Structure formats: C-alpha cells, structure tokens
Image 1 (cartoon, rainbow, N blue to C red):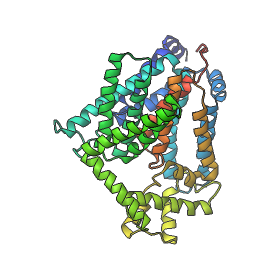
Image 2: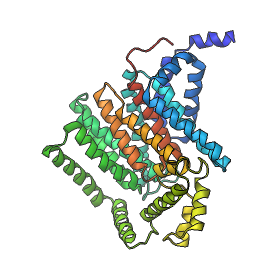
Image 3: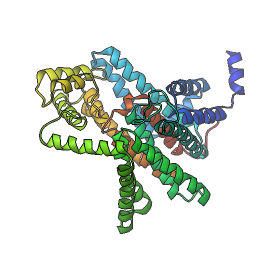
Image 4: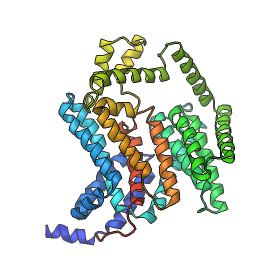
Length: 412
C-alpha cells in the first residue's frame, strides 16, 4: 500500500488527463479499440487518484452531473422490471461510457479544451483523407467503397461526425480567435468535410447540419433580415452543390422524396416509413407501460410482441426487419425502456446541458451546436446504443461541463 502511495505521489495527474484526452480525441474517429481503451483507462485513473470527498462535492454541485446521475440511476433501476437480463447488461455496459463525462468534467482545465477539440479535428482530417482516397480509388480500406467511403464506422454514425465537424469548423470561421491564414485553412477543411458528408449514404447528419446552420446563424447574428439571407445562402449553396456534385446525395434525396410520397399513400415499406411505424409501435407500448416502460433490456422482444398482437401497415419483410432491430430513435428508445419518467429525465438532462453557463462565449455556442447536431440526429438513430456516437457524446459533454467548472481548481 505504501509502495502504491509513493508511485501515486509521483504522478502528475493533470498532465496525464491532458495527454490521455488528447489521444482519446484524436483516435475517436479512427479506432474502436482506442475508444474502448480510453473509456476504461480514464475512469480507472480517476478512481485511483482518490480525493473522493472533494470529487463527490464537485459532482453534486453541478446541475448537469446531477441530472446525469439521476438519469443513469433510473436506467439501472429499470433492471428490476427488465426480463431480458442479458440485453439489459449490454445496455448498462454502454451507459458505463458515461463515467468519462465525470472524469473529464473534474480533470480537464478550461484552457486545454480548445486544444483537445483541435486534436479531434486532426483525427477527423485523417479519416477524411482515407475516405477521399477510397472515393478516388487511390486505395482500398476495410469495408469502405466508392459509393460509401466511410472508413471506420457505419455511414449513419459517420454522417453525425462529419456534420458536427462541419459546424465546428464553420463556427471557427465566425470566430475572432483565428487570423486570415488560419481561416483559409479552416475554410478548406470545411469544404472537404462538407463534401465528405455528401459522399456517404448517411442522411441523418445531412439533415442535422441544416438545423445546426440555422441555430449557428441565430447564435452569432441574431434573427434579422441579414441573418435570414445568410442562412438561406449557406444552406442553398451547400446543399445545392452537394446535389449537383454527388450522385449518392442526389439518389438519397430522391429516395427520401419517394419515401414521403409512399407514406402519404400509407405505404411504410421504406427507410422513413419504418421510422413512422416505430412511432406507432412505441405509442402502443407506451399506452400499456406509461410510467416505467418495459425495462432497459426488453425493447426488442416487446416490439416483437406488439408486431404479433397488432396489425401494422407493413409487409412481412419489413415486419421481420423491425422485429430484429431497435426503434431507430433515441427518444423512443428511452420511452420504451423506462417510460415517461425516463423521457422526462432525459429531457431534463438536455435542458441542463443547454442551460449550462460557460464563460467562454465560443465554447458556449459550440455546446449548443453540438447538442443540436447530436439530438436532431438522435431522432433518426439511438446514438447512445452505438459506440462511436456514444464516445463522441461523452467526450464533448465532458469537455463542456469542464468549461462550466469554477476557475479555481482545488488541490489534488
């Protein structure tokens, strides 16, 4: 024990957390293995560091961390009424990633946050170079293809990453912190990232980016005639260029329009139609399990039960697909799993995140833009059940809560 204490006294924890988080941010878009490594490493060191009394005091004095604890606690509590214990354990394991939020919130200094975000951008730049190399047939890489050059993750997840990177770069272009030379590089990076967004099949990030652009213009320019014109010009130029230059994007737009037309005609056998059916099923589940839901692990088998007991306007093939999948919506997933109480706790967390005070105005705006991208995307995918988007969430929420911490850091 004394030997461990001597080793501990020699560790500069501030330096460790900084460099570990820099590597975490850089490798986040690049490696599942690296994500798993840092998700384990950071909380373990946080525990070994000790000083629990002070840490508990700081955690409980922060409204976001309070809301996080209550939300996570209710999810764990739902194990009591969840019959599929194996799947429940898997979901709880993913919620374990959230421990990184507490680690970063209490361990990262404010003046290091922008540097960490820049390292995330370096990682995204490398992933984009690989994606463009696949697209232009310079090399092959894993499962990436010309029609879907997402190099490391599923295309929907990658579209969330590229959409957030685009809005992050665009916000830096609006910033006064960077000189003209830096802004030229940022602009070129923005063009390549946004172009990459339209090369892939993921419409989730493409839709989220539209909403984020509107939010960004309001944050920086307020609502007036000038901001409306700038917003329309940005959206039309970005999406118009994407439609002209990318056959994949053009096909996906036409497919979306076809899906909407089919939905109008009560045909739900399509990507968007399936999501509408999930709303129907979730509503029926909620009527029978309004407050507590069906339990954190029982969503898939409950969906199967309702598909069998009630007739929905879908084909047998679509029904088979739905019976083996999640609800394609994080809000619906939470409602199915832990009911209206859980949904209210989730919305409270979202409110606390958006209301969080951050002295750095640009970081505050970025936090709102991140929440916009992430939770608009969550309307189409349960991002908290997927490794890459979940890791993205815990990294940036941890950094934003760190920016919310008092200026004076207590002695370790």
